[in-house]
Amino acid sequence: MIRLIHLLKLWEIGFARKGNFPSKAPAFQMSEWQKWLPVIDENLCTGCNQCIEACGPACLELDKQIAVLARAATCGSEEHCVGACPENAIRMEWIPQEMGASPQGYWRHRKAGSAWNERDYGVNRT
Image (cartoon, rainbow, N blue to C red; front, side, top):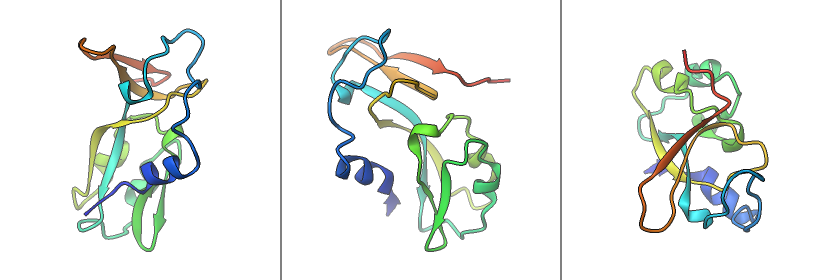
């Protein structure tokens, strides 16, 4: 079972409301915005803490000895956690998110019926 607790938490606190788009971004439907985020397979995660130590923005934490994405908004989409995991329990996926006023990480959006347009917001990819 893949842990997508962060998505459930966002829905529970009303994160899905419309109107939180940055002023320069077109106001598409929320479902049309996606962010490149880590997804942890709880069946493979051993709670070794290596992904948490590798995460610069500190968006991961342990919950019952399983790594979880606790702060999706601060994730820089840099994939350091993926490379640090000795069990290959973390993979990156496009996850529907609402873009806040100061986006971080790697995002994509599209208008209905058009191709995806990807953008890198504030991530220094070297």
